[in-house]
Length: 278
Image (tube, rainbow, N blue to C red; front, side, top):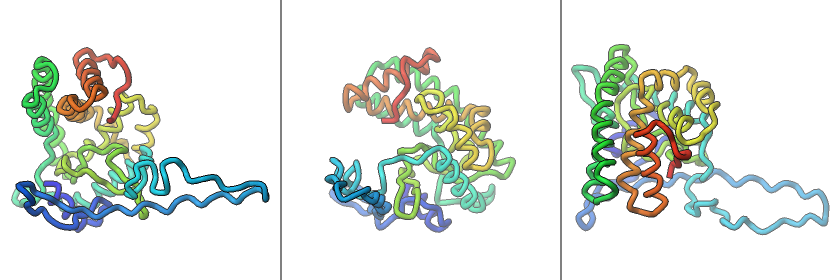
């Protein structure tokens, strides 16, 4: 699916990760190669005030930036940039949306099903209490109608577009030519408001500034975050993000704690502390 999405976005001229080759089978696995995103040029050093001002050594992280990968920058874009990216994504892909009589190599977005897959992985791995997984499955079932209603509303209004499905700062890389969408595995056809859902959830549960919603809307050019919360799409995205945390809670004590915090929040409506993206 991610390959089909990347090809469509390349054809539409959307700034997103570009496919280099594949997928091809390697030792029983399917392997796909992606173009590296060149980083922006480093900031110019300030002009010294005088002869006694010597340049210091490079930062502890070295010339490639904090992540050391030479792949864009690690400083995530602000909410206004996310809104602008979402607008360009939707405007470029809405004309390509499949009609009732047509088809597309890209499937509809289905975050509820994606969350259920993560919960199945968590159960298979024996990750955490079974009651947490049962609770999340029941919660997901209750959200299906909400998601289907939002999809139907967008379809009826002719507003279906390709949505990223997980649009938050860590899924955007700032490269030499500007911000680039990455991590396309949840992308698909759906209601544009869903791409504002992460920003709304980040404000509600992750401790992000309340002004991020207005900034996203300003970047988008329409009150998309309000549309997302009115339709309950932030609850849908939180279902995915919590299911992902449950499937990965076994990786470290910090990951286990994060999963527990998210489930407790959804169970009680009160967050013991702000959530963390990773």
